[in-house]
Length: 234
Length: 234
Image (cartoon, rainbow over all chains, first blue to last red; front, side):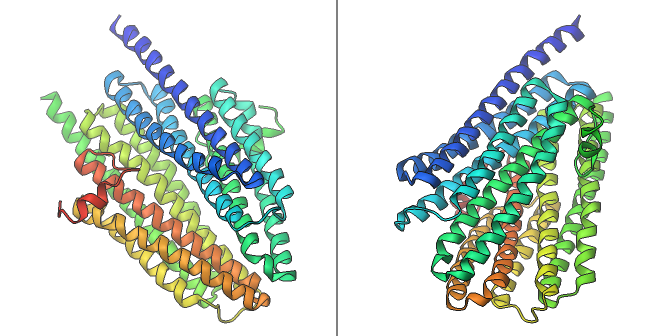
């Protein structure tokens, strides 16, 4: 009886944490989206809001870490249940870092537009990887919500595409700066934005790996598990 | 009796984890040091060793995360004891990311030297922040080993100096590239190295914050706790 009661309480506590993690996920998704709007459209006030929203994300990180600790102390989960909590703690860290990167993008975009640069070179290629990273983040959160391992496996290879596209942007921007050194300062800002997007892709990939850890019980970080399970249709 | 026995076992298990975390810390410290040597001296074979060593750091991350989970399930720590374990899990993440950044530095340094660039511009200013970041990391691990809150508080303000110096390097390198566009490609590599160093400083600061969390029970992330406690001599 006590076991069952405690297990039900555990499920309910965990569900509360899970929905708050997804809320935090929605918040950083929006932050990232807004930051990219600032980059493209130069709305300084919107950029300042993105930076300010980071406070809320930071508060959620501390609050959720506490909630996970309380859950462990009060419910003393089994090894299997604990795995979910520990993966959640790691996901929280990744989401907080996505918020940091979004705030960085907003700061750089403000810097870029305050100097009166109307149209940004390479903005279309940056838009392409930003869309890919936003999709990756969205799908990773979706896989977390539905504990969809198949989707999580697919996402891990998507991140490799973002990394490749980032390197291609970098090469193009360097060539461009060499051809017209007057563009260096603005090009550098564009590169920092692209770098932040690439990192958001990495964090989304981490979240996908934790989904697989939760479902399969396999820690696939630093392995080629996803690559070998993609074609096998696992 | 059972309580005391269990608590002693907990202490001994935790001590095993703690010494392994410090071992992992020593490993990434050496990785960072070696990566900077490759940047300055262009020893390609040494650079490849740094990249290979990252596998060992990654293995330690997975192993230590598991050890922390096992400790929680087997010893069911009190809230106070659990705080130390949860902070340790976070420190492990930061140490793994330091290893990643060191591998990135090695990769960029190899790229730089393979193109036959003998002496690197700005290498002395990069050396200065690399030394500051290495000291910060070393002192953060030392504060963790001795649970020295005073030292941890001091380190948090040291990180702000590294961030400021990074921004100054960035401005100088941009000016330099504008004056001589032929240096753009090598300058960009130098900037990525400086960026990785700045991030290592951030991770060291995070570790210092977790030391304060362990000792004080206060989660000071995203607060100005360190600044207000520095002069008060707390």
